[in-house]
Image (cartoon, rainbow, N blue to C red; front, side):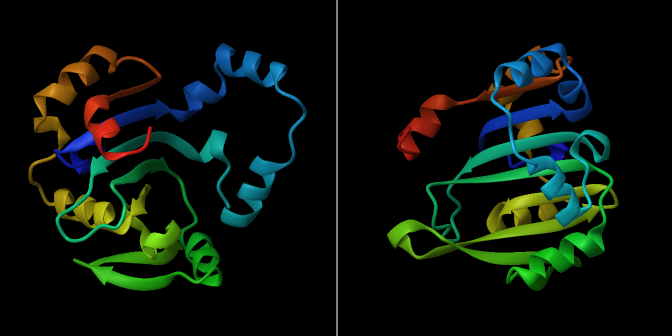
Length: 187
């Protein structure tokens, strides 16, 4: 999934979802939290996705604003590997106003999202390959589709990959160039 992350990503994160869901750390955190609602059950009934069983891993990234006018100073994307009911997810998104577009042969579900006084930005979801979905800023989803065919991705960014290699065996990690993030965002 790292090959779908743009070279200029300023933050890259990874989680082995199953390992995290059954981890002792998660169990301890759940014990400390107050009783929660049925968020996971609601999500499953709406999307057909049972997070602890259907999602294998997630790679997420934040990237600097794109040249083509991305409205947000930082845009994000999550690339999720697992088992998904594409028809159910598409129906849910269309029910909530998403439009279907095609980009280089891939169906994108695109939603306009209000962004303060700046107007709106678009968020998209695309099934990149069977069992692989990308969701995030439309610009980054286009980039992921482009990178599927090859190109300069984050694996060629030595600054980021030196950290990734350090943590690659772990169940969850996040690495980034926080100076680049703080220069663009109000963190």
